[in-house]
Image (cartoon, rainbow, N blue to C red; front, side, top):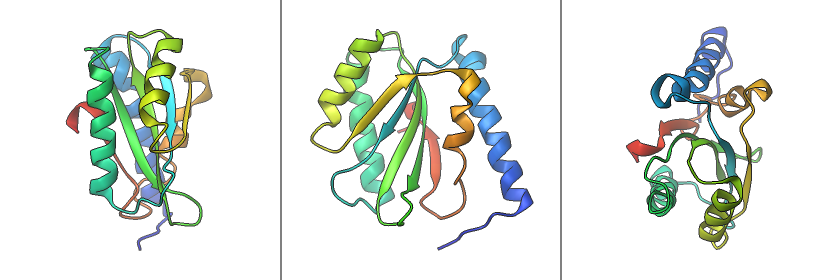
Length: 145
């Protein structure tokens, strides 16, 4: 397990957070719409399994919103035995519709937390806080899944 917290990694995480924050404005011409937290009922320790689950969720949501886009971060919980995800999402769905569809899909997999994106809250820096600390702390753009 790799766990580093050196100045170089801190700067990378900060710069990545800035890039996350600007991505939607630069590429989608608007701020992010939603923040999402996803956890699993059962321990998931495989990046390929979690990536597959995220891809299935993304494909399901794309049926309702063709313009859906976002960024996800995978990280371990504090006991290093379960992966979970943080997402920022751009969607044309209403907040109620988005919450309904994501909860309906994920409820058998785990727990969902959905909120409105607020750039003043700097959620992007919360998302990047553990990037590169272990091989499981990674990120990607949802459309790359």
